[in-house]
Image 1 (cartoon, one colour):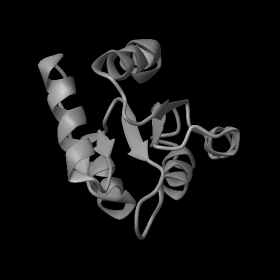
Image 2: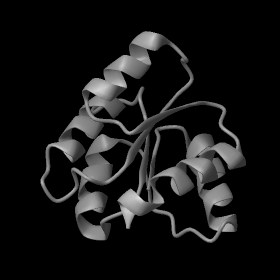
Image 3: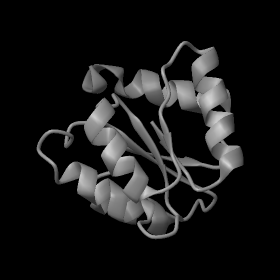
Amino acid sequence: MVIDDSKTIRRTAETLLKQAGCEVITATDGFEALGKIADHHPRIIFVDIMMPRLDGYQTCALIKHNRIFKETPVIMLSSKDGLFDRARGRIVGSDQYLTKPFTREELLAAIRRHRDKAA
C-alpha cells in the first residue's frame, strides 16, 4: 500500500511496484488508508509523513496499535532526511524510513528487507 497526498508520488510508487509484480493499493491520506487497510490487509505499507487530516506519524501509530496490523511493516516516506523525523518515526513504530525522491531499487529493497515479516 502507498499512502501519499501527492498524486505524482503515488503514481510513481505504484508504477514501480507494479512493474516488479506487486499488487498495489493507494490512498491519499491516513483516513482513506485506514479503511483500505482493514479491507485489503496489505503486506507492507509506505506512508508519507506530511499529509492533511491524519499525518504519517498518526497513521503509523494507529496501524501499529491495532493487534491485527501491528506486525505489518510500515515504511515512512519523507522529503526531509533529518534525525528528528527518523526518530519520531521509530517512536510511533515505523520499520524503515525512505527519503523522497526514492528510487525503484530503494522501494524493492524495502520490500525484500521486510518480506519475511510481511508474509
